[in-house]
Length: 106
Image (cartoon, rainbow, N blue to C red; front, side, top):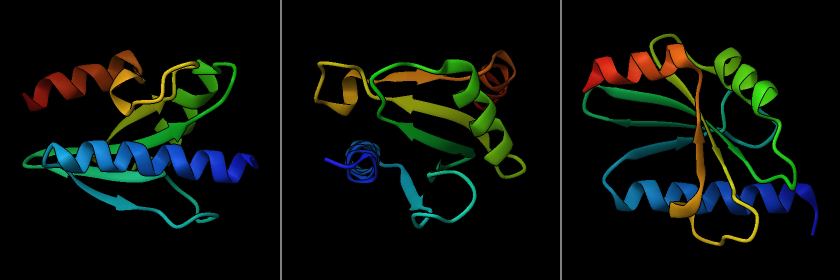
């Protein structure tokens, strides 16, 4: 399976998981610059990078999410866990600054 297919499949699984919980997801078309998905509900606005890689590259992924986030959106990485099929079992990764911003929305 190509990395494009694998990544698209994971992004779709994350999107379905979030939409089932009442979040609105706007997906960025493949090869377009920016985040993978914009997720919102109420006052919460997330810029989401979906990652499905065998090895974790936390620092570069968080940097990418931060760089691609629209103004006012909280950058988040949702990473697939090796050996787990469900989106619910993912890792959710963000910087401390993004976490503080998230807490402010609660």
